[in-house]
Image 1: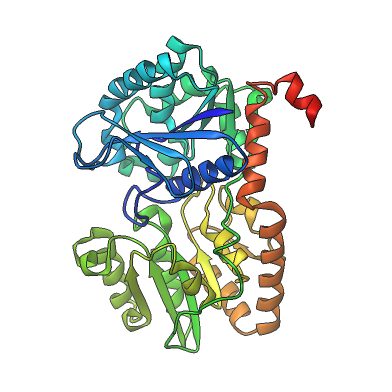
Image 2: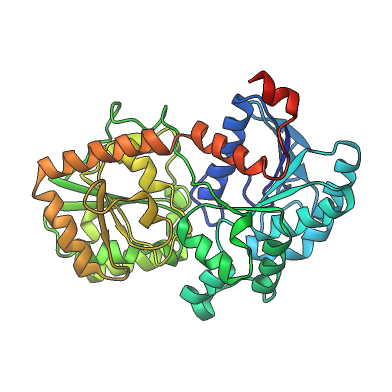
Length: 402
C-alpha cells in the first residue's frame, strides 16, 4: 500500500524533548518504519522549518520525509501554524494529483485540515489520529490553552468527515463519540515501543542516592513534574531525575525549568533533583534502567509512550490515572495508578515500592511481558493496517494468495 503520513509539526527526524517534539514524533517515526518493514511505501509530509533542509530525505528506516514549504522556513510553536495549513494542503493536492497515495493518515488536527483539503480534490481516503483533542486540552488548561479559537469546531468537522479515526486509547473513544464521530468509524490502535532498544538488559546510568525516580517528557506544565517534585519532599534518600526540555546548557533559559527549580528549592529538595536536559533516544534506556520507579504524573495524557518504554525496560511505573495511562499501566500488576494532582498519594505509593524490592521486580517483569505481548511497533503497524483496510480493502488476488 502507498501511504502518505501527514504530520505538520511533528517531524519524525526531529530531536525530542523540546516544546513541540515528543510522543507524536516518535509515533510517526516508528509507525512509518514498521509499515515500511512490512512492505508498504510510506512518505511522511511535515512542515519545512529550516531553509537549509533538503526538500526530501530518505530516513535510515526506509521511509521518505518530504519537507513541505508552508509558511516561513522557521521553527514556530504548533499553535501558530493554522494560517499555513491552506498552503500545506495545496502542496499535498498538487503532489497527489500526480502521485496519489492509496491512503493518507493525518496526525494531529491541523494535519487533518490540510489532508482534508488535498483528499477532497484527489479522492484520497483519509484516516485520522488526533493524538490530543482540543476539548480535553481546554478542560484541563483553561485560560492557559494557547490553541487557535476554532480548534474544537474544526476538530469536530475533521473527525466526522474522516473515513476512519484511529484513536490511541479507550478514553479517547468516549471523547470522540461526544464530538459526534460514529463509533463504527473508530478503531483503537495504541502507540508502541521499540523492543530492540528498550530492554531490561543493557547499560545502566549511574546514580547518587539510595533510590532513584525518573520522569521523562517535554517541560510543559501539563506534564505535572511539579507533582513529582512535591512528592519527593516526603521521600528521603531518593533522587528524582527529570529528563526533557532543551539541552542541558540551555535549561536556565527555559521558563518551565526555572519554575520547577524554584519549587524544588522552596521545598528543600533542590539538591536531590537532577536535570540532564534533553536525553537522546540512545541514552534513554540506560536512564530508565537506573530507576527504581518511573513516575508519570500529567494533568492529562492522550496516550503516553514513556510508561511503555519503562515497562519494556522492566521498571515499574507509578502513573496518574488519566487518559491512555489507564490502558497501559495495569494497577497492581505492572505498577500503580494514583489520582492526578495528589502528591501525597504519589509519595505513599512510591514509598511502598521503594520499600519492597520483590514487588518492584514482580511489577517490572509483568510490565516487560505486557510490553512485548501487546505494544511492539510491528503489532501496532499490523493493527493500523487493519484499520486502513476498512477504507482500502485488500485486493482479492492478494488476499487469496495468503
